[in-house]
Image (cartoon, rainbow, N blue to C red; front, side, top):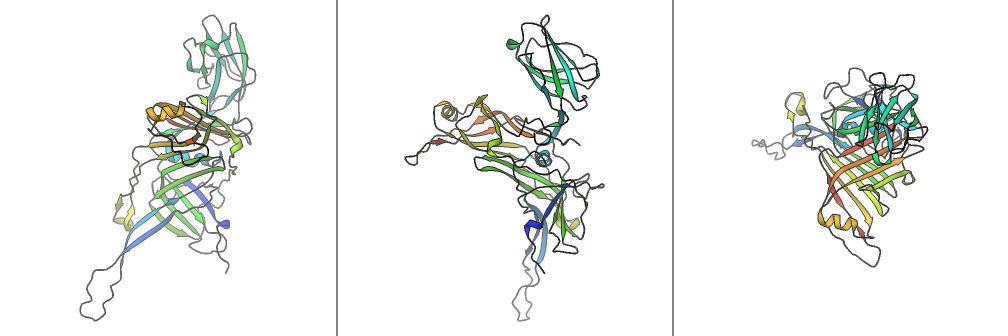
Length: 411
């Protein structure tokens, strides 16, 4: 018999509707991972029963303990399947339609997105100087009520039909000095915005050992999986995404839960795809490697007797976010923020093409606002260039991750 190889392995994710159980309607997503160390293990406790005068001083048969399910699911930064994991690391996802200027006559206005229900194609955004208003008309619709934008900020502009809104950000001092009109294209893709909330019920991961194995054991399903930590490492040598999982149950099977899982493909972002790297709104030209880590503080100790000592639940705790990066030491701006424990903000984005979400135009955006820097200093270890290594914590739900692709992750 030929040896099993990792190259033949497949990994499929299923959303659960009841924690710890196979979904009632299996709809698998093929996950593109660089490995999977999720396992189900049972420790043993040595027997304390005495030999009883038999002359045989070896211990009696040990007893098996609770089932511990957990491990890692490493991958690389991508805009295809990563969102399925981000949702289970953060909890909430709101899905919109990307929108972009086909014309750009209304200065001082940035298009954020349209609602998911908004008709695709060209709509009209009109600026009226008298009253300082914006008015939105979606494709094929009538104009909505004009909105006073003189105060600046973010505004949700209605179209004539409820639910066909356009969200924009306005800088009032940059608005035109006369009436203007722009064509806005609502794009056939999705902007998925992930934020912190109560985590989803859980997911089932299925491991396929490949065709060299037949019978029960070719497939192993791990039910009740929840993400404890998720870390994004953005480096000049590529990207790594580390996902640490706790689970509830494990069982071997001879066949897959879904024989034809959906494959959205996988394209890893590379260093040349970095489109934004900012600290406090200013390009971080001296920035180097960066890591962003989510910690959900899962309580993995909720074991029960029935079911063979399995986890009945895996409650989430507070969500913590830590960021660390390195930067060339060129001036005192970042250094003083480290010394003083200053609050600031960070933004990092990768994009291919125009980044608006259609095939070969995907993107991912990390926004951390606010962050609080940890007090630190420099280390000079030789004659070479000196770097600083700022560490910070995001707080008050500061982390937002936007993924632009062709997948509605809110479903």
